[in-house]
Amino acid sequence: MTIVFFAGTGSHGQTRKNTYRKYEKQKRVKTTKRVKKNNAVYYRYSSLPRRGALVTQIPHNAIVYNHHQSRYYYSSGIWYRPNGRNWIVARPANGIRIKTLPVGHQRIRVRNKSYYYYYGTYYQKRKNDYVVVDGPVDAEVNSIPKGYNEVIVNGEKFYELDGDYYMNTTNDKGEEVLVLIPEPSYKS
Image (cartoon, rainbow, N blue to C red; front, side, top):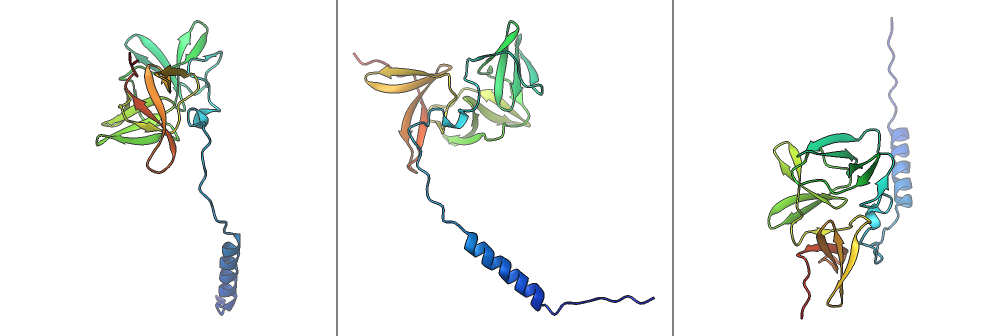
């Protein structure tokens, strides 16, 4: 029995490799910085249900969380509460624990503490879980879900969602963001 190995000269493989590299260089496209329009309020969650919306069905994979005699359903970062035969898209109660963060969450650092944000809900890591917490004042988020209220105080526009108030501003990178602030007060 004879085993024959064929070894290439290397020139064919080298030519193919160089051709691939040339093709890659030709296909490279220069990207430009995207400029956000004035829609930082809800653009990221525009395809998701509005906070407070009444829905007739929830995703079949929703996980049930019982918390202090209240029941919540959770699926892909969205929380639901039963309302008769329907459900309301809602903010979950503080203290509810989940094992994994939703895809697309935003990590936020405020006063040397890490928070995670998705769809109007803030989480903090505790041991092997992520716990729903109040949002920290000065948190910069890129969007809040629809269902917010516009509030005008002393001629300035703010956005209120579930008792949290946000101010639209520009961060150090020139990006439009929403900053969680204390409840604005009227000046007399």
